[in-house]
Image (tube, rainbow, N blue to C red; front, side, top):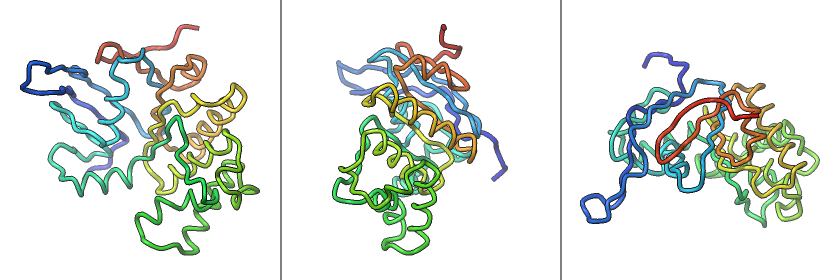
Length: 234
């Protein structure tokens, strides 16, 4: 496969629900979108605009009704479920509004979870990888703390480290600062930006925070199931 600097490409992607019924509805309409390696892209738009559906399709959690989706050059429409799962596990990391950590596990153990899912049992290489990621995110001192004994901002940074465990090409972050106070939200955002700059990891960040959107490389706005690009008004 030829090398490409394009991590993500959508060609005329549409999504319909209840196909063939009287309540059939199309929520995404012929979306074209390209994201290059190393970009930090904000996705904005009102509730009900189709952002969540778009993110689910990009994250290989749902399939488009029409159109093509390429992830690191792989055209996904003909891939079976097992191949989709492998591609998602290796190429895409997820950070959500709520961290979804396992409260009875330490920060280190939570970061190791994607590696355990891939390889089945813990080893020193996994522990070293988790330690390095937590150190990069300023959490080495807390790596043996239980998740429920950490602040909201610390927990979200653990979630970012977990998303990076498999060294994915792109992180999909869905309102990752939405549950945080202003100071913690700013810290978490700057941590993601630092990961982007240091590692070249691509980020696609869904946010309602226009201040954060302004600090991204590019803004994609979703309105009524269609996308347009531009900068957020100051």
